Image (cartoon, rainbow, N blue to C red; front, side, top):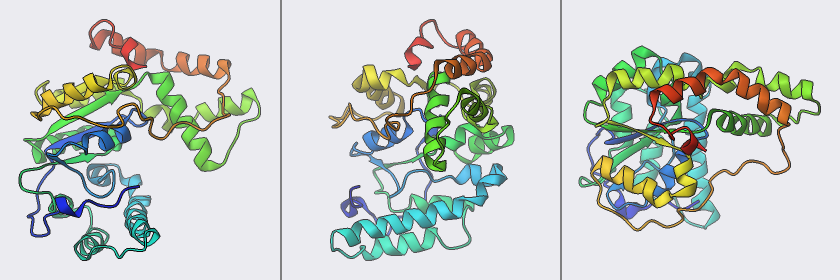
Length: 291
């Protein structure tokens, strides 16, 4: 991981809100988006991915792990400097101490996350958990970030679920050894929740029109990454930039973990309503572009 670019750090900057927000979906290229778009000279991101602000307020169970999320981010940033035999820059250290100290997840705390952004920059928050906010959470976002623009990447429902499943198995150090064990794994409701487009997309569309909410298919990242970025630049008012690493795959799935065809078929059956929703809600061909 790279060190924080302190040349683009305004230690005297005032608390502010993000101009661009990536809201998901999980396992749909949000890390790639953050890493590529942050190369743009007018984009500024905090020194960690995922501010997690709105889900901290509206998805109570997330508070079981969110303080740890920021403590880990702080520790990892300091470790990167230690590994290179360098001291963490003083202003960065002050910033990390502040965002990991109570009170956290207040409106002011959220705006402080983006305070070091240069005045001419557009601050960005990419947090895929935002896509799963309840109705009142999306309503709050619309009122609190009334000038921000939002990007929502949709991945093929089965592919997305399998990618999340592999991540969950790797983190849990589990490896199903029979079809029955695989079927038990895909019975976890959390697995399908993150890709419940039928529930989540109408919530966001009720509060944001096409001028403020850009929905893109995940498959564009693989087939036409530059075209994907040009769509985002046009949407956010950014001038075209010459990006590097557009073909880089971020967080590739674990090798040697093949999901049986029976399990894929079972997932497809369980996600049939999602496909039906997508087909009637987007132009012809959009679903095919999701993979």
